[in-house]
Image (tube, rainbow, N blue to C red; front, side, top):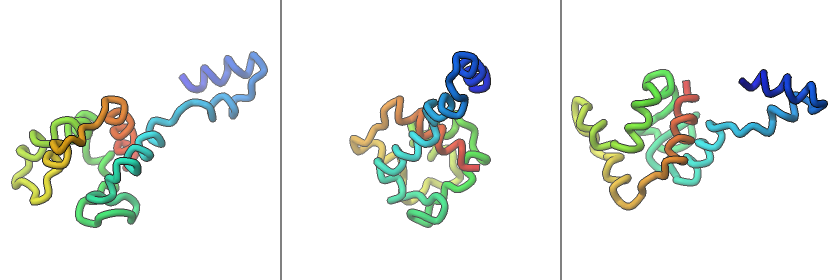
Length: 115
């Protein structure tokens, strides 16, 4: 689709690089949500954050549906583990830290990009 947009804009005289640069990057938006929500307090990505819960490679280990469930129904995901973690994401989410649908979408895109 991006290629089709670039071709159409090139026909109209708009440089393709400029057109593609203006498209929003969902994973970049998710990285911002990750930073704004201070996810590094509990999680680590690329050597930054809490070493206890590394997210490097999570996009290669979990499907997007599972990533989304961790953000929307962490309690169910924790119950499916062999042992419940000592620090539970479900408790953090339950303490009035619910994540909006738009932020969940952005975070899922970001986490899925971590392969």
